[in-house]
Length: 142
Image (cartoon, rainbow, N blue to C red):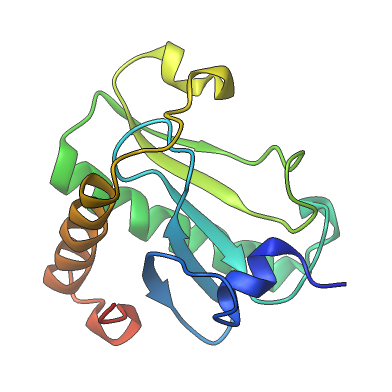
Protein backbone atom coordinates (compact mmCIF):
# COMPACT_ATOMS: atom_id res chain seq x y z
CA UNK A 1 0.00 0.00 0.00
CA UNK A 2 1.37 3.41 -1.00
CA UNK A 3 2.11 6.01 1.63
CA UNK A 4 0.50 9.43 1.49
CA UNK A 5 3.88 10.78 0.34
CA UNK A 6 4.02 8.33 -2.56
CA UNK A 7 0.52 9.45 -3.53
CA UNK A 8 1.70 13.08 -3.46
CA UNK A 9 4.81 12.20 -5.48
CA UNK A 10 2.67 10.31 -8.03
CA UNK A 11 0.18 13.19 -8.31
CA UNK A 12 -2.75 11.31 -6.75
CA UNK A 13 -2.87 13.92 -3.97
CA UNK A 14 -1.92 17.56 -4.62
CA UNK A 15 1.29 18.97 -3.20
CA UNK A 16 3.13 22.27 -3.38
CA UNK A 17 6.41 21.04 -4.84
CA UNK A 18 9.56 23.15 -4.69
CA UNK A 19 12.09 20.48 -5.77
CA UNK A 20 12.10 17.39 -7.97
CA UNK A 21 15.00 15.21 -9.04
CA UNK A 22 15.46 11.55 -9.89
CA UNK A 23 15.84 10.47 -6.23
CA UNK A 24 13.98 12.99 -4.10
CA UNK A 25 11.26 15.60 -4.00
CA UNK A 26 10.48 18.48 -1.67
CA UNK A 27 7.06 19.94 -1.00
CA UNK A 28 5.50 22.15 1.63
CA UNK A 29 4.14 20.58 4.79
CA UNK A 30 0.35 20.82 5.11
CA UNK A 31 0.79 21.40 8.87
CA UNK A 32 3.73 23.82 8.94
CA UNK A 33 5.71 24.98 11.93
CA UNK A 34 6.34 28.22 9.99
CA UNK A 35 5.78 29.62 6.52
CA UNK A 36 8.02 27.71 4.13
CA UNK A 37 8.15 24.47 6.18
CA UNK A 38 9.28 21.91 3.61
CA UNK A 39 9.49 18.12 3.59
CA UNK A 40 12.35 16.48 1.69
CA UNK A 41 11.26 12.97 0.74
CA UNK A 42 12.94 10.14 -1.17
CA UNK A 43 10.93 8.85 -4.09
CA UNK A 44 11.56 5.34 -2.78
CA UNK A 45 9.37 4.30 0.15
CA UNK A 46 11.72 3.63 3.04
CA UNK A 47 10.08 3.78 6.45
CA UNK A 48 12.98 4.46 8.82
CA UNK A 49 15.80 6.85 7.94
CA UNK A 50 18.42 4.47 9.37
CA UNK A 51 17.46 2.01 6.60
CA UNK A 52 18.31 4.46 3.81
CA UNK A 53 21.18 3.46 1.55
CA UNK A 54 24.09 5.72 2.44
CA UNK A 55 24.14 7.49 -0.91
CA UNK A 56 20.42 8.28 -0.67
CA UNK A 57 20.81 9.55 2.90
CA UNK A 58 23.60 11.85 1.73
CA UNK A 59 21.46 13.04 -1.18
CA UNK A 60 18.53 13.87 1.12
CA UNK A 61 20.86 15.84 3.39
CA UNK A 62 22.30 17.74 0.40
CA UNK A 63 18.81 18.62 -0.87
CA UNK A 64 17.77 19.58 2.68
CA UNK A 65 20.78 21.90 2.96
CA UNK A 66 19.96 23.48 -0.41
CA UNK A 67 16.34 24.00 0.68
CA UNK A 68 17.58 25.33 4.03
CA UNK A 69 19.79 27.90 2.35
CA UNK A 70 16.85 29.05 0.23
CA UNK A 71 14.65 29.30 3.35
CA UNK A 72 17.36 31.36 5.01
CA UNK A 73 17.60 33.69 2.01
CA UNK A 74 13.83 34.26 1.90
CA UNK A 75 12.83 34.45 5.57
CA UNK A 76 16.11 35.35 7.34
CA UNK A 77 15.23 33.31 10.44
CA UNK A 78 17.32 33.00 13.58
CA UNK A 79 17.94 29.37 12.55
CA UNK A 80 16.87 26.94 9.87
CA UNK A 81 15.42 23.92 11.63
CA UNK A 82 15.87 20.36 10.46
CA UNK A 83 14.36 17.23 11.94
CA UNK A 84 13.72 13.62 11.09
CA UNK A 85 11.19 12.06 13.42
CA UNK A 86 9.00 9.90 11.19
CA UNK A 87 6.05 9.08 13.40
CA UNK A 88 3.19 10.45 11.32
CA UNK A 89 4.00 8.89 7.91
CA UNK A 90 5.94 5.62 7.43
CA UNK A 91 8.06 7.10 4.62
CA UNK A 92 11.34 8.81 5.50
CA UNK A 93 11.14 12.58 5.33
CA UNK A 94 13.27 15.47 6.49
CA UNK A 95 11.52 18.53 7.91
CA UNK A 96 13.26 21.83 7.04
CA UNK A 97 11.81 25.17 8.15
CA UNK A 98 12.69 28.74 9.14
CA UNK A 99 12.71 28.94 12.94
CA UNK A 100 12.71 31.99 15.15
CA UNK A 101 12.72 30.14 18.48
CA UNK A 102 13.06 26.74 20.10
CA UNK A 103 9.25 26.60 20.44
CA UNK A 104 9.08 26.14 16.68
CA UNK A 105 10.70 22.72 17.14
CA UNK A 106 7.55 21.41 18.84
CA UNK A 107 5.08 19.69 16.52
CA UNK A 108 2.31 20.56 18.98
CA UNK A 109 2.76 24.11 17.64
CA UNK A 110 2.02 23.41 13.98
CA UNK A 111 -0.27 25.74 12.08
CA UNK A 112 -3.46 23.78 11.36
CA UNK A 113 -5.34 24.54 8.15
CA UNK A 114 -3.08 27.35 6.93
CA UNK A 115 -4.49 29.80 4.39
CA UNK A 116 -3.94 28.35 0.88
CA UNK A 117 -2.83 31.77 -0.44
CA UNK A 118 -0.21 31.95 2.32
CA UNK A 119 1.01 28.48 1.36
CA UNK A 120 1.09 29.32 -2.37
CA UNK A 121 3.07 32.47 -1.61
CA UNK A 122 5.59 30.46 0.42
CA UNK A 123 6.02 27.90 -2.34
CA UNK A 124 6.58 30.56 -4.98
CA UNK A 125 9.05 32.51 -2.82
CA UNK A 126 10.99 29.32 -2.16
CA UNK A 127 10.98 28.28 -5.84
CA UNK A 128 12.24 31.73 -6.81
CA UNK A 129 15.07 31.55 -4.27
CA UNK A 130 16.06 28.09 -5.49
CA UNK A 131 16.10 29.26 -9.11
CA UNK A 132 18.14 32.33 -8.18
CA UNK A 133 20.63 30.06 -6.39
CA UNK A 134 21.18 28.12 -9.62
CA UNK A 135 18.92 25.12 -9.02
CA UNK A 136 16.33 25.84 -11.69
CA UNK A 137 16.62 22.40 -13.27
CA UNK A 138 15.13 20.90 -10.09
CA UNK A 139 12.44 23.52 -9.47
CA UNK A 140 9.00 22.62 -10.80
CA UNK A 141 6.77 25.26 -12.30
CA UNK A 142 3.68 24.43 -10.21
